Amino acid sequence: RHAALDQRKTARSHGLVSRSTAQLDLDPARGVSLAMDALGVKQTAEGEEALRRALPKSRARLAIEPEGGLVDARFQESRPGARVLVAGSGKTVYVADGKTGRRIRIAAPTAVWTSAIELTGERVATGHEDGSVYVWDARSGAQESRLPVAGSEIFALAFAPGGERIVAADAEGRLHAWDLAAEAEIGTSKPVNEFIVAIGFDSNGTRMVAAT
Image (cartoon, rainbow, N blue to C red; front, side, top):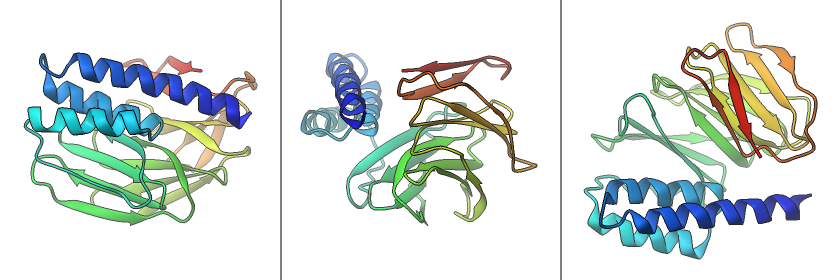
């Protein structure tokens, strides 16, 4: 099972590296973003090389090297560059201000497998190898909640647009929806017997897509 997931991650990372390379002369900043996405999917030598090639061509003002190597990297989608979330395999997570470079370090309790950042940039979430989801205050790094998902490792996370819900995908291909205010699980899907590697919502938060 893990071998199949690794193959899928390798293929997805390779595709993102190819897109990053194509953007080097057209949009270097986009090239950096795609290279970081590739490393977030899987840390590879070609992903690191793509990032090294793209950075000098861009106007990047921020460099973060998490302990243990990069596991995941996310940008605040509503305000690109406002906040950056970087997770490392050494149980460390950094939330940085993309303009000032100021950053906070979050010491995660177990290995991080995936992460998400709320549209407002006020909260971030991390999914862990022990099946837990943690929600953190992006400004202080304080833990807000721990959501014990009834499954194995967490492979994908996403906040709903309003920030009141979060959805996590476990290793069996189940989606778990949580009400963050109540810290209660409000729904679980049937397993799809595929690894879900990404989750997204429409702008209203009423529909969701999961990629395998």
